[in-house]
Length: 287
Image 1 (cartoon, rainbow, N blue to C red):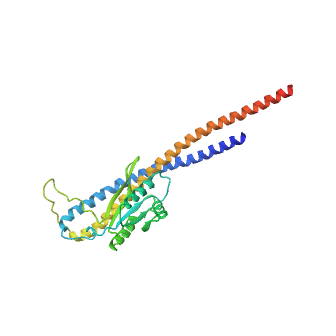
Image 2 (cartoon, helix red, strand yellow):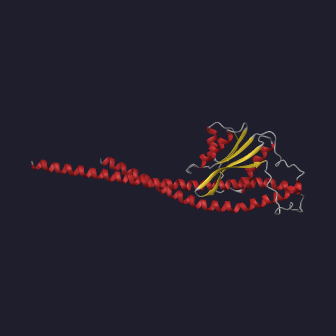
Image 3 (cartoon, rainbow, N blue to C red):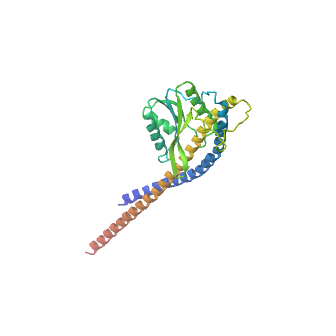
């Protein structure tokens, strides 16, 4: 019985140590989530403005077919999957990878590009061929990293290795709700033209020429969408990790309570046994 009591005490100490780690990770995730949310909100005005500029440009260049705008007849679809580099974030990675597998099952031809170590390892283990992979994006994705990813996608698109590129990421809705989302990257979907009420299209004068502006803006528009997707995914990852670590801490409390009760029962049983032996010994001496 004493050995059993010592084993229970060791388990309680071990679980308390793990609980301290999960609580610390929960607090870190909550702090990181706040910063990630701020970055998501800060990136939205830029995305709106660049989309508005393209909306105003397109009517002026409607006779020109830009290679990033023109749809293609052949249809090898590329999917860029955004996952995390680390685990301990609940079902975050599983939701994204399963959603991607569902999309791939509907395609006759496809190409796969992964962002994040978890997604890369998941698809490699299942025999998928990757056109490109990006890992170690970090806790705070940068514009420089996004440009590198975008340039790789432009190269694949220009070389006709893919005829369409979609971004699959976890959209951040709130700290308690995220959902897998697919966003078209290439060819660029023309935003709805800007109108003044029900009147005619607004007329603008451009400097430099609209064609030159469009050639500058379309790549930046794609980079902005990728960057927004990375930020949304990172905020979703921290939210999922915060919830997962909170649940782990609560489970640790329940386990400690159960083991403490078992420990007290075992110790009481050991004490009762010792008392019984002492009383039995005393009775034997009297006899």
